[in-house]
Length: 261
Ligand SMILES: Nc1ncnc2c1ncn2[C@@H]1O[C@H](COP(=O)(O)OP(=O)(O)OP(=O)(O)O)[C@@H](O)[C@H]1O
Image (cartoon, rainbow, N blue to C red; front, side, top):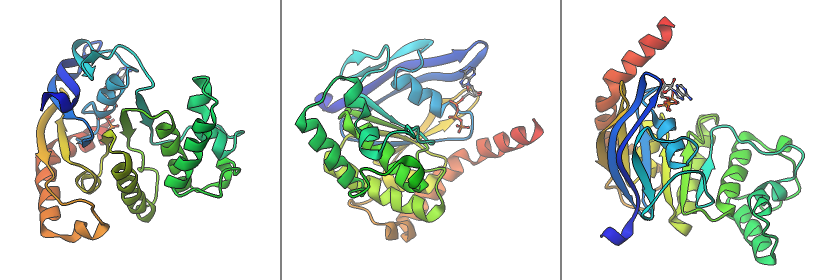
């Protein structure tokens, strides 16, 4: 059991000045697990992801990847953000290949991998298009291919589909699961949408706020592979309801606060 642990979080606390954003988070994540993080605005979801990504340091406690304490960014972790940050002057193929290019890898194998990833995300034939010629959904596919191109152990996804319309978003959810089934990378996925978290995940981490903390972990015992129709089953609806009840109070409080600002 120990051997399959990918990420260990011990006593993780984060402060920005006087503001305690994360308090005493303890958990571990198994190799190949798909974990989503939900919680009200400001509960520290992004901060947690940035610490795992090495973009932010902990105030106390540690996060270890394969037993090594994370102390900065690394190629073993790939990020996908809400806004794609594709380079507008590069075509799709060279946007996807940028990570390996920076790392100085220019082998035929790397080129073949880039090509394969474009196929995997459904963009075969678009290699020489430019970002401005693609829809939002297509750009997020490129973003995902780019994160996968450096073959990270851990994929960190921060609300990657929130800028997409509802239908495109559902299609991207099924596409992401299809891609994940192929490589079974460990994924940490932040979202505001509870049904998205339940649909994708093995477990959902429910965060609470003030201070941000891991309130509860909900196991998602739904069969895989999953199709969108599963969202209409009573088991699915019950899981979404259960998670909503856990965060409802905090969400209402944060909405009122934002309104008062
Ligand atoms: N660099 C920073 N300096 C100061 N405060 C910060 C910084 N980054 C985040 N915060 C604060 O930390 C808290 C948690 O922010 P974070 O973005 O992690 O929350 P979140 O759960 O991802 O929120 P949302 O759902 O709105 O994206 C917020 O109150 C935010 O204002």
